[in-house]
Image (cartoon, rainbow, N blue to C red; front, side, top):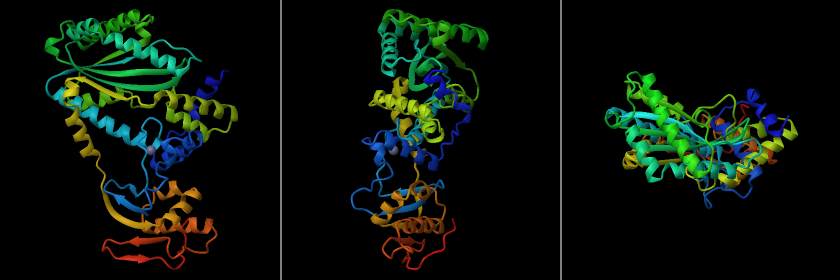
Length: 387
Ligand SMILES: [Zn+2]
């Protein structure tokens, strides 16, 4: 079995949980692999000399104030989850408004041929070259006329399957049905055939001009969203845009899961190498891009998404001193602290860190608990642990 096949054979056994605690544990894997990346400091290094404020948020999560957040959405499991949620909201908002305005959507997944063992950088370059050709005036103009394209949202996704790296674009063509000259089908089925012929034909032509033999059936998939209900259109589009986990391929975050969960040393070594290759190739690339009408409403969609994602600190549980935070990180309790539900659990975590560093109780200057009344008290006595 090839190295790649061995890694893929772990899929049925992987726990693909993506809660905060799991994401932070996967962050530790990235830190081990890429010690010089920003991810190594994410939710670990404090900002300047500040203490760490632990608060609950209006969404029931824990916010750690005063620690660095890396924002490296491609490779940081914690920031990836946050950015994906935001991206989904942005795209959903654009799709929803387009649909409400009577528009039609043609969703496509476009890729290029690739094989096991090919470097990701080569396949990505090939994909970029064909896309660039698709965007040349002649091909794009024809595509836009035939489909009635007025805007476009494109999302880059990189997965790993039996034929090696599989970078692909999920594209939502925002179309004006009245101007879709060549989508004449009388039923959704025949309209879909028309849309498929137009999109895959343009993609094949772009490939031919780039010197890449694109196989229409294998390298393009097309769907028309024919729901009457805008929300259903959004849901369908979300699936089509690739935000779902697949049974036969691994995402980059899955490669980290393999490293964290699988015991076979050879498999772990391959997963590490593949993740490092992905991290090097994906630097500075935008996952999402917008053109035409999608670009015009992008700013408003971002503002709406940010308002929807806004998470405000609701109740401050306590303040952890810098040296106590260091002890928590050192004891591997960062992940546990990030999901505490109460002051009692917060105290329990700090106590565990204190015990791990040779103290018999929580030292006087390690933390303060905060209460709603804004009264701040010090913890002086040892507190029984619940763990
Ligand atoms: Zn991060």
